[in-house]
Image (cartoon, rainbow, N blue to C red):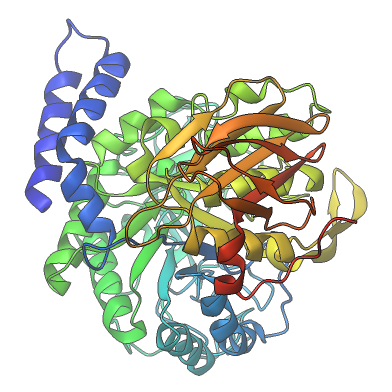
Length: 552
């Protein structure tokens, strides 16, 4: 499998070096052709066996999950119910030690301290202890779910000591522009991990392992990104700010052989010691795509099998996402940020969004085999850095799209499933946030996904408000399904399900009547205004253990 990714990488490099080609357009065309020719191998790679399987991922945390140390215990208790509902994999929060018990995990200090050592004023992390983490992972896997570990390789924070070394000040708005000559700076770049005492890894980190910092204690008012002596900012990163290698803290130099070796060691250790089944990688737009092709290949060689890896490249530019997929050799999936943005805009349009355009410019439409689709995440939720809320009324429509269509690997957000209540300060004001739970409808969609979302998909995305699709089933999953949703008034649409003279009911319970198909397997399906209906064969309800009330 590795060979086909290396082939793509080679062809992309040739395209980028050809001055006669527009790199972005050429890369998109190349990637489309490559995906078409390798679709069977890629599809088989996603599955444990060549069988029908609708995998569903859940992000099992949000930014404001309680910092009471009980997260891992709650997950252990909830694991059987999640598996029963139809969740097949969980993306867990970063488990390594951050700066305090409040750290969500992205302010990473020690990747090897999973809540075991007294560092930064605490033994446990925000989520609990190492023992509880391993027990939760074991409970998830015992219930039949895979576990994906969150990888934070971009930066380190909360160093143990400051160090003096040479660095060049660069313009924060254009990192390619020096603001002066190289000079001595002082920064928190020494990471000794004294309490861990060399267990699991003996490496200590120093200034030469980082290519940049944004604070110089010798001149604290000088606003600059300080590029380390002898280092350069990485290539094959996002080009915002000239070069977006540097994001925050002490920026890891993944070209340094000791850093590269340590990150590979941590990956292998996580696979063996924790038992992770795959990875979600944070902030990949700030890390060279070359590194991840090498890192993933090393881990897959070590394990002797393919690993699922999804990267967070948060961009709404489809051409940019094509470029990153190609530059990383097609070796990882990406979150479908453009689809999330379409959901956000539709939810804010008050029924005036053109629903025919809902999938335009998305990975779900363009690169479905490598798209991890989502409605919301911890960065887009209210009061966070990428806040772009999908309004509650639209979320059932959005979840129907990601869970009941053929394309993409859907990811459910913890706060959408369980609801959330929290407060935080933004722009000098304190806000109290209530996020409603959509668990009932998501569970119904999961029932339909596991039982009826198979086989040919017929699209009827042809109306400004009301759109739909049908799934015709397969020999292994013969039940048909029709999905209809509207962001405006109540809608109806003629659609084919391939089942003549068959009675269907709305699994959501939104509409109580029965719809019967005609002799050609067509019917006029309905949905409420600003909502969604999922029509399944009436005979399937008993198989699903669902009792629906008849319309009165």
